[in-house]
Image (cartoon, rainbow, N blue to C red; front, side, top):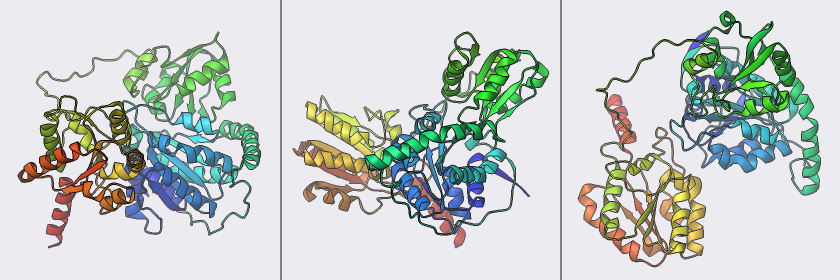
Length: 528
């Protein structure tokens, strides 16, 4: 049977059919649809959203400890949040299969950087899988869990936006049963005291030769028949499709497809021996290009992103890969002059609009007011017509940057953070501010959902006042308002009052996201 699936959906269905018992994730484009698909299609799989990627990684490791298979999903910047648990999980090892799915975003379609998660896998010294198609993304999941249990290591699976968010027909296999509960009885490798950790690290190092052998023999790494050729191609993950669309056989170009790491060194050397130069096609950063340069030496010609044969930044395409292969491209389409750009904007009726309107009105009254923003759909407040925030760096940074600026003498220093981002990474910053009695005003703009990624549950809904009070904010300075134009006089008055308070104050503008509200109303009307 075949199904038309997004790459994310193919991964999710592959994981379900591989017998997972839990998926642990924080929503982040382009990974969100994996967990949503599992939530909708596998009632026997634990699938509630986690507070952040670190808690997701740790919970999945706990399920693995119990002998069951677990999937962790996040976008590439989530790997930074999960890194402590992720890297140490390679030292503890696993019991039930554990696969960490990182969805990278070359060209930064919805991200603040273009980092490549393969670096994390190499850093942790664990196997990496990088499917080249939706079918391979589905097929590789049971393979990934089996590899994890064979090597007793977590496995990193890396995809990119174009694979995650494009559709293809996928042939479906027979599902596997979930593992039986079987908690690990061996304590020493789970307790990372230095003595145990040194032994575990030595074991991890010893496994590297076997991991390389498995990559050399992997069905997902394939070297086409080689004859003497001026140029050969090493194509990684989705870039293999871009190479194949240019018909390398017609061009007389042999291809090494790489979808499992460590890099299959013997295959690279075999290809290099038949070619005068190699072109490295990889979506993301020049991870493999740098390794192959080191492997083959400075006298061998290795081309790719570092040499300018492929663009140094952004996604690869069939066109720019074809150009690197010497294919003469026809004139491509250009944007018509009368097409007006449509930059993203806050939805009409969004409560964040009223929050920024109020903040801008008050900020104009102070010569040195600074508003520190955060990650979420409300980041669009940086754009016209509001231009309301002065920074946006990473999840939770609004509060701690406002604290640091206030420590330096900036007044007023205001932080704007969303409800989901606050529980993800803002609570610890608030505790720092409370402990230091920093003169900052924090606006937790609460739209009762994780709106930017489609309206998933927000971990702190209906708990924010209690969280702030529990962290030590003075009850008199935890204020709740309803962001509507008719309440603008009240909201601006409260902002002025809290700015002048010489300590930590929190304002919570609360109104449901207009998109989730509309969906609820449509559903209600349909039911009626």
